[in-house]
Length: 221
Image (cartoon, rainbow, N blue to C red; front, side, top):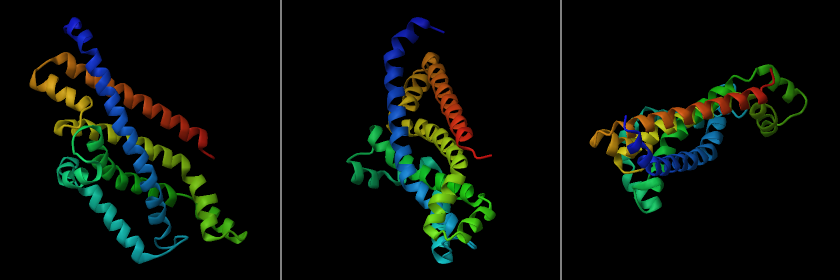
């Protein structure tokens, strides 16, 4: 490995890392804002749920299944017109946030649904027997009890976003995926390919450790 070339590549790698973290961070915020309430609604409107509404549950579940079943590379291409309309272009960090969010929202929503459904029914019944209304039960019982599992689900979603961002680099989104493609693959500079892999592994490990630590701190068990 040419370490002199690697030192010259450092500015490019740092900029690509910044772009990857930016697009993943922005997509994560959008995913939390939209995916968290979506998952809670799906979990609570199902059969026996606190807010049972079977037609709404079926509709939202159907939409989530469509989003989860679509391969990310196809989703990116399909959303190009919408991305251009929304952010003014389909390239760069801004252009990547839209398809990244669209892929992550249904994924995270399903994980939130699973986490909420795992809350023991005894806790819900106890809260309702004490006079807790439906909204109160959702906010004060379901969400706090499911929070550790939601944190783990968010961690898994962020790791998936990092993988998606690498794929987004192949269509001009920038970031580490773009560096790996342009330098590592097209120019066959193994220093770039190896460096991007190492950086991605380090980022994923840090995120996984922080997520596990947060879930353990919030766990009531």
